[in-house]
Every structure is written in structure tokens, then in C-alpha cells.
Amino acid sequence: MGSEGKRKMRLRRRTNGELFQLYADQLALRHRSHDALKEAHRVVRHFQEFLGEFPPSPELAESFVARFAERKPTTLYRYHSIVTNVLIIDWI
Image (cartoon, rainbow, N blue to C red; front, side, top):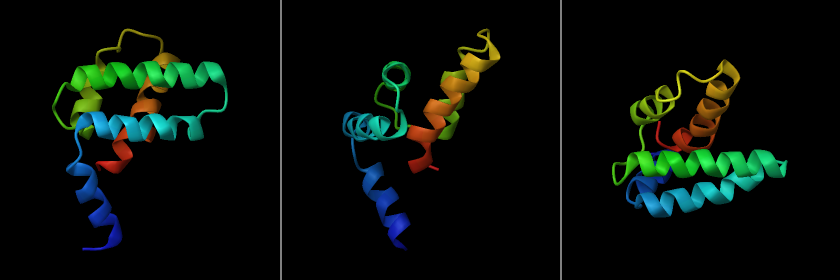
């Protein structure tokens, strides 16, 4: 198993609270405007509440974003981008 595989195994052992704290730190690196950062934190917080104690997965991320299907396409894309780019990349 390579270093990437080992990293993913370490992440799988963490609780959701620990994982989402790591991603909260990453958000500041990905979003330059205050408003975008605030929006990303809000979406991530809702995703964490949606998951409860279930571990994050691409399927649960899709299910979460699908809840907002009636929103405008740009909003839906933004939510999808936040969840996939910040959270799911480490679990795929």
C-alpha cells in the first residue's frame, strides 16, 4: 500500500467531528472571499448534520446535494462543488 492508501486509511479511522475539523481548516485555503468562505462553512455544516455518524461517501454526498434539486443550477453547482472538492476527494 502506497502513501496515498495509508493516508486514506488514517482518515477512515477518524470520527466525523475530527474529519470536519480538518476540512474546516482546508476551506480557508480554498476560498478567498469572506462571503464564499462563510457559504462553504454553512454548506459543510449542513452536510455534517445530514451525515450524523455515518462516514462520508460519494453516495451520501450525492444524496445530500440532491435535496437541493429545486434550486437554481448555479446554486446546485456551488453546493456540489463545495462538497466534492473539499470533502469527498479524500474518501474516493
